[in-house]
Structures are given as structure tokens and as C-alpha cells.
Length: 162
Length: 294
Image (tube, rainbow over all chains, first blue to last red; front, side, top):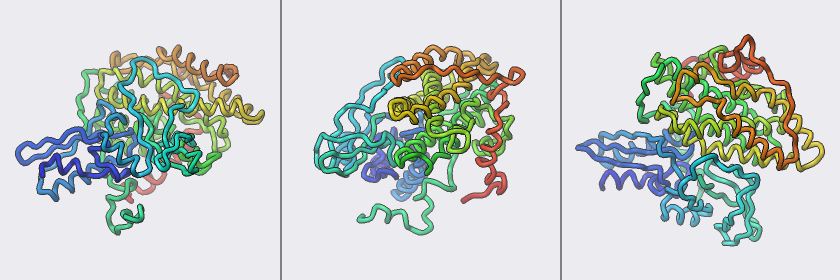
């Protein structure tokens, strides 16, 4: 396997249904002679899993025979949920987590203020109903909101757009 | 696996834990070009922005398990985590520019009160301690996040590549924080007579520390192109706060501003009485057991 293939299969420590490649945090993998340089970017500034991602990348690549591995971090450009792959969106939905919608490039100028929770329809990943409500904008990790389905009455998590 | 927690139980596998020992420098592997400016001023500026986030993060974390509902425990803790992440990046940058052998931990845990450069709004007790309540806490979140969001939008164009990148990332986080506060202001103002009273009193209390947010400091003046002049943020800040208060049917507070002391305030290390207690709690383990790991 190439170093890129190995790195692409490393799982996200907090959302283990996704690989780092699915999540869009794996930015680059380069092989130069015996040396592998992997570049990753954090989802949120306070993401507590960065050290773990670095350690996982180094150990998986080492196991695959790449002895000289460097993991670099980039902060720019800032991660966006638009970088989650189509495959990643599907895997999230399959595991009961509502995927984010595509938001496109950020508009220039002041960030608009939202005085109400977003009105967009988020289908329930369990029963498909569109009658769902936001319980909290902040969920079990920084990247998730908590919602409830008004039909099947189950709570579910949603990756919020960033 | 059948049980999602099975993977966490391997004995001796410390790498499964996101908390505890083994943290590396928050800027590991990040490009580290330093612009040709006064290094002392750039160090001080990174400390200002980093200390705002660190100290306020500590205050928000005090609410964990004390908020009116579980969802709010989680929300305030998430906001605290975003700010702690910003603080780690900014203090690491300060340490790197200073180049005096200190790291982010030394800056967070081993500086005394007079060396902290945060604005006083970040440190005051807005509850759950005796200094406030949930209304006061939401009032501070609205003021702080509206101000910091306006600041970071401009900082994203800084000539310092690390500050620019930290700011561009932070903008997205702060937009969520500000929306959260604004929506709570509306709920509290439109709820019962009691909830409305709490948010009115909360806004009046924190408003006393707003002028300090927009006072240009000599450090900012010494870094043209790198630092943002906070005086430029006032118009946008007033407009956003005005929009929220109008929607909530509230008046702008008319609190007397807490004046600087002999011309000095939080940015110069002159803090309120609350700061010493906050630092005692935040720093005491690191200072009682130097070099301890867990």
C-alpha cells in the first residue's frame, strides 16, 4: 500500500465511522525517498483529538513499513464541513448521525447574526421524517448539535455546518 | 464492536484518552514565520488575545454541572473548549515569538496576576458563584463574543500568518457563540417577569466593562498591519448589540464604566479582585506539584 492509502484509512478518534480522509482533515500525504510527510488540519481550535490523530498516523504508517514519518498541522485554510466527502456524508447518515448540508464559500464581510435557530429541514436519520427540532446547538462534541424527531421521538445528533 | 466503550478499556493504552498527559505544543508542525515587527510587542499582543480566551474559558468551565439544564452544561463547556483551543494556539505563538524558553503551560500556570493581559470583562465573576447568575453569564457571552468576533474578522487579514489563521478559524466558532447568546437573551427577555429581570440586571453589570474593550493600547498601536485597533470595532459592536436588544425589547444599559486605574487596566495587568481567586483555582495544582503528569 502507498503511504497515502495507509493514511487515508486511519479512523477519526471521535467519529470512528469516518476515516480522516472522509472527514477532510487529511490535507496531504507526500513520500520523498524513505520519508513520509502527512499534513492534517483541526476541525475546531479546541479539538482535543489532534495529538491522538498524530499518534495514530505515525503508528499505522510505522506498522506498514514507513519508518520515517512526520505529521504536520496546517491551520489555513480553516476546515469546513464542506470538506467531508460524499462517502463520509453517507456513512454518517447510515450510523444515525444527520450529515451537514453543503454551505459553499463564506460570504465576505460581517458574519450575519441569527436570532432564531436555523430553519432548514434536517431529516431524521432513523425514520426519515422531516419533523425534527433542535434541542441544543451544542452536542457531545464541538462539531455536533442535538435534535429530536417529532415522529419516532428519538433524539439524534447532527454535524452542524461550519 | 457491540459496545461503543469497549475500545476505551484496554489497560495501559494511554493514547485512547484525549485528556491527561502527552499534550504537545498546540502549534506542532504549523508554519512559524515571524513578521519583521517589534517582537516584544508581538509577544504581548499574542498574550492579550490568548489571556482573554484562557481566562474566560476558565470562567465558562465553572458552569459545567451547574447550568439550568443539561444541554446548557454541554453548550457552555463546548464554548469554553473552543476558547481554550484558541488560547493554546495564541499562548504557544506568544512563547515562540518571545523565545525565552517558556511554553504554553508555563505562560498559563506560572505567571502572576500582574503579568496577565486579559480585559477585565473576561475575569469578573458572573456566576455560578456569588457574583452573578445565568442571566449575567449570558449577558457577558453576548458582549464578549460580539466583540471578539468583530476583532477576529479583521485579524484574519493580519500580516502575522499564525494570528491570521487562528482568527479565520475562530470566526466560525465565535459566530456560533454569539448566536447562542443572542438567542438566550431573547428567551430570557421574552420569558417571565423574573427571567427578564435577570437578563436586564446581567447586562447592566457586564456593561460597566465595555469601554475597556475598545481602548487602543500602545502594544496595538505599535503593530500596524499585524494588530487590530479595537477602536475600529465599536460601530459594528453597537450595531449588533442594538439589533439583539431591539428584538428583545430591552434598552441599552446605562451603567457607569469601570475606569482604568491611573491610566492602566486589564491589558496592563491591572485586574479586579476576582482575578486572584480565579488564578488560584486555575494554577494551584500545576504550582503545588511542579512538572507533575497524569
